[in-house]
Structure formats: C-alpha cells, structure tokens
Length: 443
Image 1 (cartoon, rainbow, N blue to C red):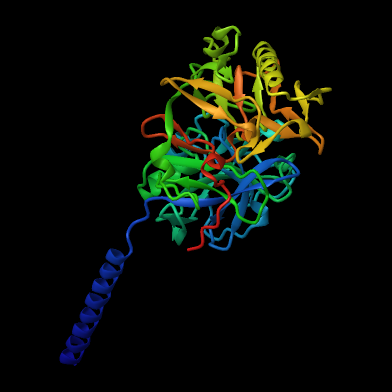
Image 2: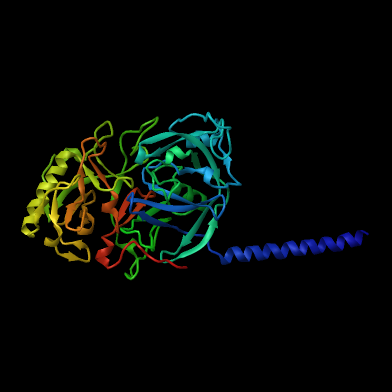
C-alpha cells in the first residue's frame, strides 16, 4: 500500500514540476506591459469626450466621460454585475489613505443598503460632476480592472489587474445629470492617488505618465489615451511623436483645499505657467499679473477636459479679440456680427483653407521654459453655421483660473502628462503632420 501511495506521490510531484516550468516559460514569453491604450470618442451633441474601461469582468465596458480634474473614477454601478466588488469600509487604512477630502462614512436613505451601490458604513469619497455642478460623498469600493496594452502603434493583449484593488465610487443615477447619454460616469484623471493613471502605474509598475489625443470628429476611428508613456505613432506620419514634444513644467496651485469642491478642484487639477499671448507674432497687451497665482489659489492657468472653449478673464479676452481683429484685417477676413458667446466672427467664404484648418492669424500661448503652444485655424476658430466662423475663445468673469484651456484647443494635439518629472509635453498640431488623433490601431 505504501509503495502505491509513494508511486502516485512521485507522479503528482512530477506533474507539478512540469506545470511550474510551463508557467515560468509562458511568463518569460509574455513580456510585462509597459503602456496601456484606451479609445477616446467625441459626443457631438454634448461635445464631451469619453472612454471605456473593463471593471470586475472583461465584458463590463463601462463608458466614462474624461475629467482631468477628477479625483477618482465613478459610475452608476447598478447597470453592471460586479461579482468581485468589495466595499472599502470607514475607518480602514485604505479609507484614511484615499479619503483625503474627509467626506465621512456612508449613510444610506430610501432604499435597502446594497453592495455595490450605497453601502452602509462604507468609506465615502467625494465624486464631482462638473457638467451639472454636482458633488457628493459616494460609496468607495474596489475591484479588478481590465486594460489593453500597446506598443504605441497598435492595440495588444488584455490584462487583468493583479488584485481586485482598483478604487472607484458607485454613484446613483442623479449624478449622471448633464453627461452624455452614451456614458455611465466619469474617469478621474486628476493629479491624485486614486486617479486611473496613478492606480495603473502602481498596480502594473509602469511609468507614471499619461497622454491624451482628443479627436475632432465622431468618426468610427477614435482618438486615444495612453497610460505608461510612449512611443506614440499616428499614421501616416512615421515618426514617434514622443520625441517631438515641447515641454513645460506642471505647477502646483498654492491652495490646498480640504472639504467639498465643485469643478476644477486645485487639489487635483493640472496647471502651467503661461507667460504671454501673441497673435501673428505680436504680443497681446494685458495685465500680466493675472497670469500668476494669488495666495488664495485663484488666477494662473489650468487645463480642463470639461470646458469646451478656452476661457479667459474679461480683460485678457478683450485684449485677445482686439489683437486678433487687427491681424484679421491684414488677411482680408470679413467681420460679421458676433454670435454669442463668441466676440469675433467672420464670413466663412472670406477665409482660405489649408491642412491646418482656416487660414487665420496664429494664436500663440507662451509657456514657461521659453516655449509656446501654437493654435492654427482648426483650433482657434469654430464654425457656428455654414456661413460664419468665430474665434473659439470666450470671456468669463467668474472663473477661478485666469485662463482655462479647453478641449477645442486640445483637439488633434498629443498632450503628455509626465507625473514622474512634473512636466506637460505638447506636440505640434497633428494636422501639421498630415494626420489626426483619430486612428485605427488594429492588433
């Protein structure tokens, strides 16, 4: 009997050894991912940009609006089956680590407390919807995330996070107000530890960088977001865009706010130092002190994925419109009555076209590091109807930042947020390279 047991024990050990060698060989043949890729699509009705991520199960493609100032990812969990979801409870180390805004603990009203969803006693993390000016504590939980790797040219394999520890909050349907009806929440891309890119960097041990390339159309081919760094290829242009980026420092807002915030929370937003604005190489004259932060954290320049057209404080905007209209005269652009909210509009047929859009005066934003971000006609103008083009900047008196760079100006530029070195990398307009953000990246 003992020899029988011994015989089969040896067989078992042998099989385990073979399996271990096979697993090791497989691990060596499949290199660890260095970067991940996500599709970015534009909803022409709302002018919002959204992606999708797999949560809990690979087939759970959760569509989420981008939020560059978002602390965390949140969505309506009721729409999905999340078999491996678990709430993060109040008082735990994770709650203390993630809940830096001190939103407290969840108390559920009106319905039977459920998981996922409103979980009684769960850690409450403040979720923000800029489009409807909504903010509130939502149940914080965690689960697996599924992501697709890339070599910068094409999509690769799907990867499941090593552990079910990707944090997100479950919202109710009321939080979806103002969002595209194609989406179920928002992807938090802010500068914080619970953001999508920070979590993927930690869980997969990849470089803490992410890049966005917003499409200008709703074509079948999407734009893309990369997490983990380059290379970045946009065919038919054959060179790596990562090697052509101009860079400027990402700067920290002096105000560190605790508590609830609505829109553009300085704790998680991205800021750059703008040094000047020029039109056709001529400096625009305005009070330059508006470009610097005040002690209360106001002024300065932020980037926003929830603002469509770049917003300027009134005095800066008026100076820009004045400079642009003077430059437009030399280009024989015929001005017409303004159409709100735009302050300078022109007859479309009086403006020539090129590969970079309407041929109009260049608008350059000077940046720290002795560089500038140039906007060609495709990004400086907007077609309001078949006959009229308007300068695609707006003035607003009640913005926290003096300048809020919007998504219309970002379209068809690759923007890389390097959180390792606190730098923003900006490509030239991809249309200048005879390509766009919209790409087919078949594996």
